[in-house]
Image 1 (cartoon, helix red, strand yellow):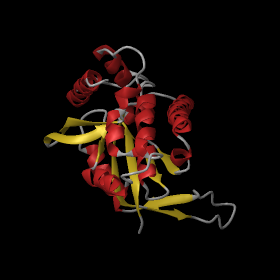
Image 2 (tube, one colour):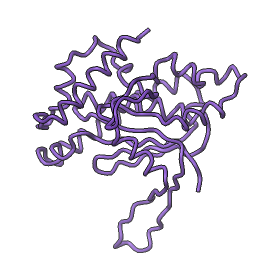
Image 3 (tube, one colour):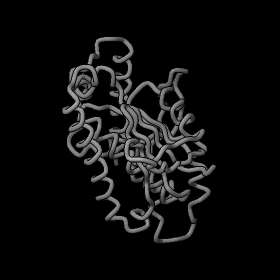
Image 4 (cartoon, helix red, strand yellow):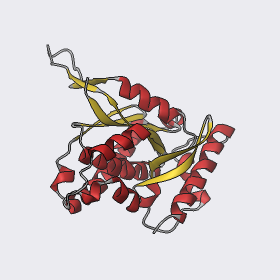
Amino acid sequence: MNKRYIAYLDILGFKDLARNNDIGHLQELYKRSIEDGFKESLGLANKIGTQFIDNKLNVIVISDSVIIWSEYDSFNAFAKLVVTVNFLMYSFMYKGLPLRGAIVYDELEAISIPEYIDVFNLPSKSIIGKGLINAYSLETSQNLVSCLIEDDCINHFKDQTPTENNNVDIFNFKEMVHWEFIIEYDLPTKEGLNRVHVINWPRAIRTKKPSAEDIRAQFSKHKKNIDNNEVRTKIENTISFVNYCWSKRS
């Protein structure tokens, strides 16, 4: 089974979202969040060049989960995935759909399913592999709007990246940190604080620094309940994370 770069993203507060809104409203929310996120990442890709654009990413959205994986195992694919997740998290957050996720380098295979007869409307692909389990476990361990990047994933990316090539300098790990797509942070998890690398999604905010109330409002949009300790903790942790990322802006 092939190893690939995989991002698993989950919408927080989905039960309230689904119960308290009609399906048409949800469809429009999903459509705008996904389109805006990918449009932003594609805009950056056009500035960087074809090496970024040509590395295909696959996407499946199932209920509250957004799963993205690279077609190929390449350092450019990891860079594209990081940038894409960055803009997607920002786009979803500011439409009231906060995401939590993880990026791993692990086994995943897409299975093409033929359409045998017309009465079965089967999906064109299904995905299996340990990578999904690993990414899901890391995603659920976090206690805020964040996307953890597994150490093995970063180490593999560093090993793949050419050391001397002026055309791809933008994709090395040092440059990705310099451009603030990735940041190191003491991440609140269910087991305590863990110093890890995460997606710096607040970098996509182009206006003024969001207030604590701005962030709380994203959690409560679309008739979602935030009046319980578990959600309040996620909100406060997210506020602290945004403040930290903002303090590191160059």
